[in-house]
Structure formats: structure tokens, C-alpha cells
Amino acid sequence: MSDATTWWRDILEPVIRGRRFLHALDILVQATGASKFLHELGAERSFAVGARRGTGKLPDPAICEGIDLGLPGAGDMMAGIRSGEAALRDLPPDIRARIDAWDPTGEALAISTIFGRGDAIAGRRQLGGRPPAWADLEDKTVIDAVWDDAGVPRAPYRIRPAADFDGALAEVAGPRGAVVSGDSRDGFNGGGSHVRWIRSEADLPEAHAFFRERCDLVRVMPFLDGIPCSIHGIVFPDRTVGFRPVEMLVLRRQGQSTVQYCGAASYWNAPEADGLAMRALAERVGEHLRERVGFRGAFTVDGVLTADGFLPTELNPRLGAALPRLFHAIDTHLPILNRCIVEGFDLDWRPEALQAEVLRTTETSRSGHGMLQVGRPLPEEEVHVRFTSEGCEPCEADVAEGRMVTGPGPVGSLVFMTPDPAKTPIGPSLAPRIAAMAACADRLWSLGVGVLEPAPELR
Image (cartoon, rainbow, N blue to C red; front, side):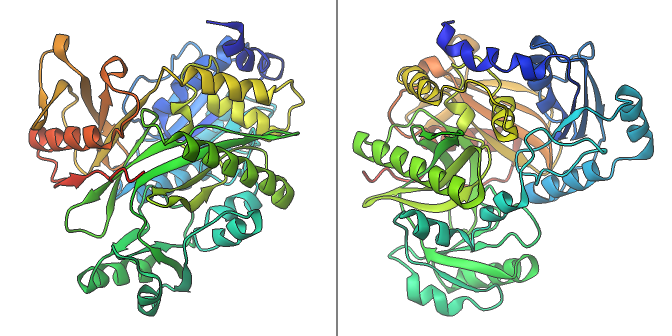
């Protein structure tokens, strides 16, 4: 590995060495890679608390004590996130006592979820905690003011009470209907959970009931057809750098108003002119966020590359789930790196070099996977698959083009769908392959997912 790709690992050692870190996460296995990285940079033995175990390897007990709170499966993804966050904010006395025994001075730094608000965990200040003014910008009913102030083109929209938005549908609906997105009254929402695609009056009763129960306000905009994508930027002290857009694997449910968020992947290439324009847009938004709220660190502008170009749908003023798809060849731990940027450590960040290295390494090396959340237990299995003219089917490992792995998840179980990078073409959308894998998983484990359709490429 070149010195260039290790720079953003090595510069963190002075601020990591000798410190203690408390990992407080919705999924315990997420502490595995982070605790290993911190240990290699000289941190003392970590402590991790997870609301649920998750699928994958647990932290090495030699470098990180791990506790699984064992919360039961939640009804849906948002319920899982919120119940996990509530449990981590109010840890049982016996676990607090174990944390205090591990860190008697209370000087450990906490590392929590990417979507939290930066509150202290067990009395420990968060490393790179997110201020409320930043988190507030994730609300989909306020973000259009940011687009306007930053000079970002957007689709027409209306903000309406959650109990009365029908009139706005007729005002802004496009040829394929309208999209209604709910506010963040009850906290973070993502993964398409508070989104409804309204194509006809038949979609309204469920949408009315859903938003009345969970939101005060909704945003109504035309349905944007094309590839859902996320453009990432990182705000450093002296400049913002943007990266290539990443495909968001958002599949459509046949005949339903909900969408299926499956993850992100970097195999897709936007047309060159569009990619450059989107990168410039991200950098402009990042500079505006610094001026507006003193923002630092990673953020995403999510939207759709339509037939007429990119239009934004939301801002995530935090590390996005898709950015690691671009950093897989950079020898660092991106969430830790980002928290150190947010913390304001005075380090030689070299933002232009980081941007160039990420762009260079992603020319020929891409990554990504899909996932399905299932509301019941599944046997822990690994199935190798290949793609055919009919879709996707199980096969032997030596001819496989991907694999599916099942395990425990926040709502019951997870199915991870991972194409083999060596056998996955760079350029086309990955969504058709993920849709085919989801159909194969549905047949194998009777998931009840139904028919999922990829978005079309229109540019």
C-alpha cells in the first residue's frame, strides 16, 4: 500500500494513542473494526455496548470488552434505531458501573451512531459529537432553504401539515405522480422510511394514516425518475472537497407507495459532465454549511440523476452510509477519521491530496452491497449465487458472482447481498443485480418481499 493511502491513518496516531474509547452503538459488531483500528494506533483497551448484536464478528475481547444489551427485534428500521438510541442513553446501573470501573476518571471519549445528536454517553463526551444545529438540517421540510441559499437547483415543492397535503399533490405532481416526505418531529428518519410515492388516489389512505401518526409537517414534490444517488463532501478547516456520486440502491415495490432501501454501491458511473457538476455542487453546499452553521466533516447531498440532470431531495449533515464505498482503498477508518475532523483536531489533513487519492483509487476499484431487513429469525447461512438471463440463482462457490449471508438484525434478521467486485462491471447501475438477488433471497427464505424494481438510467 502506498504512503499516500496510509497518510490519513498515520496522522491520527497522536490524538488516539493512550486514550480510552467507549463505543455505544445500535449494533455491537460495528465496534469490531473501529476498536481494532484504535488499538493499532495505540489506544487503550476499548469498551463497547451494543443495543443488539448484529451480523458479523464481535470485537476481539483482548482489545475491546463488548456487551450486547439484547434488545428484541423492532417492528421496522426506524423503531430499531430509536429503541437502540433510547437504551444507550439510559444504560442499566450494572453496565454503568462496569463502564465506571473501566474508566474511573470519566475521561474516555464516546463514539456513537452516525445519526445521533452528539449527546454524552454514560457521562462521557462524544468524540466529534454532532451539534443540534447540524442535525436539524436533516429534516426534509427545512432543507429547501439551504438549496436556495447555496444556489442549488431543485424541484418545485410544498410544505403542508401532515394531516392536509392533498391539495399540494395536484400543484406539484409530475408525469409519474408525487412524493411525500415526513419531518423529523420524532427524531432521525432515513432509508425511505418516511417517504411515500403517490401515483393515484389508491395510495392516499395509507399515506394519510402514516404521516398523521408520525409527523407535523410534510414536503410534497414531484416524483423524480432516474438513478437515486448520493454526492459526498468533506468540510475541512480551509476548504471542502467533493467526490464522485455513489448509487443509492433504492428499489421500487410493484404496486406499492413505499420504496425498499437496500444500501449503496460505487460501481455505477454518472456521465462525466454530470459527475463533475455534482461534485462541484457538493463543494458549494459544503462551503455554505461552514458559513451557515460552522459545519465540519462529511456530509451528503442525496437526490436523483433525472433525464434533465441532478436534483436534490435531502441533505445528510453527517457521515453518510455510502461514503465508505469510495474509501475502501484508503487505509484508515473513515468514521474515526471523520470524528477527528469534526472534533477540530489541528492535523495536516491534506484535503486536496485525499480527494485526488479517492478519485484515483476508485477509477478501477469499486465496492458495494445490498441488504434486506426481515422481521423474523432466519437460519445463519451463506449462499453463493450467479446471474443469468432469468435473474439470479444459487451456485457453487467456484463459479459464483456474488454471495448472500443471513444473520440477526435490528428487526429480526438481515440478508446481505454482496456481488463479487472482480466479476461486477464498472459503469452500469448495480440496482438490477441487487433486485435479482433480492428475488432469489425471497424464493430461498420466503421473505415476502415481493417484486422489487430498479430505477432506470435516463442520462
